[in-house]
Image 1: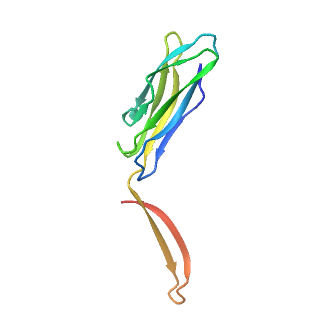
Image 2: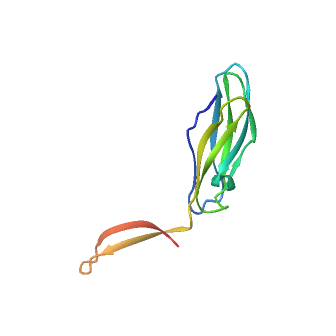
Image 3: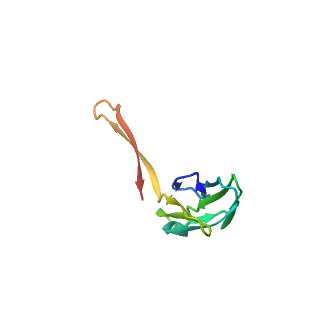
Length: 129
């Protein structure tokens, strides 16, 4: 029994309002189906939502669960663990990183020569307000 994803990274750029999501697939190579209880622990639990709290992975099969983060809840980095547990089996842990970018704006600077007024360089940078 294992998860096919080694990490879940949920990143939302500034201005995004819809949740970001990733799918985690659990694979069962055994001969019996396995029921998994799912939860997110740590700081990421406050901003993430699981598609299901419990899934059953069929024998020699796989089952998916969607983990999503709402960028409007709070900006900044959040970390945690997606924990899948089943009686008499070791827990399956997948690290979770959820990051909603804070308010930022693009500033473009054009540098000109004082004598010839030609553009010498142009650069774009993102700045926090």
